[in-house]
View 1 (cartoon, rainbow, N blue to C red):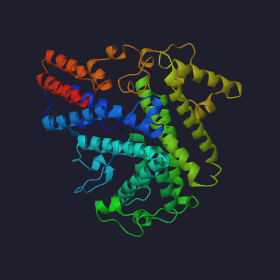
View 2 (cartoon, one colour):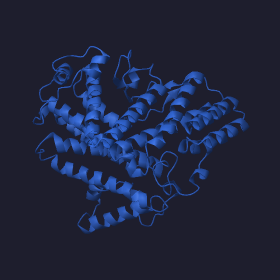
View 3 (tube, one colour):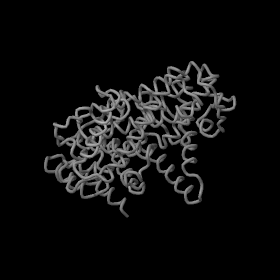
View 4 (tube, rainbow, N blue to C red):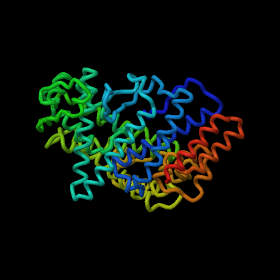
Length: 433
């Protein structure tokens, strides 16, 4: 679930437009974060430096709506949080349903500051000749382990630590999918000797049970030695596999390029994570898992190839992926896959309906929308074909987009919303200097 369900104390005219823009900015940020954690932003031709202005705009808009109309998360938001630890804060991790006082701007700040720190350290490691990929993986693994163990201690359920990490990955909070996979692998090994949340936590903290936020974030971790996959971990492993294929099915049921690529990237993030877990967790996988591991590896490779193909594709957006999928489906059929089921298990990333050679691409599939336009190839004139509020989401760091939205809101008599939009133009402009 993406945290875009909010409640407000009051709703002056035009407030719904600004809340919609904030939702779009949040979805885009989480999508970009998932892309960065899975393949790296460079695979999309995007630099992290270009993200910072968008992040500042997102946080400032959330802060403004909190202060003026009382924007808060709706109580139904069963979404994980992971704090960038600060003195005086009690909970390191958990779910928004238990933290009604956790402001949307704080949630976004924690996400974006962690991302900024990870990118800054990675750049530093590369400049000094260190193994940046390995360091990033270990850093994210340690952060996520602490957060997952904290959550397990609060719930009293040892396996909830893995479920929490799955939600972190699929929401877009994870900064390095391989780090998440390493954390899950260590948890599965530790479960071999831990049947309660307390024993699981003590196994990682040298026999101690942290009693403060400072302890949770600073006491050195003791990593368990590799162990045979315990029988009690079986349901957790099945959950990992089922969630992976379930998210992929969600992507195949979408009705346009924007929702499809967002859903597909969520699925691809977990698929890559689970692929690494199955690779690392045991020297020999149980017979039932070996073919599943192969299928997940194939799907992970196809997602990577899909993204690479987008970089050289020509409009319309989906023409290349659809043509490629149809060619592969024909090859599978020629090899005996008469029902297409094997192709679907191992290679299908797009909705099955798009395989119909007689069905032309609809407008919804021809070009990216406002949530994906920052990552996928953007045809000329795309932003002019979007609504004003969609154009702001796609180009949030451009003051002209906010001014155009402000003028439109003012013309509709939404004076307060127009003033907020005009002030956001100033925020965007300040990021350019």
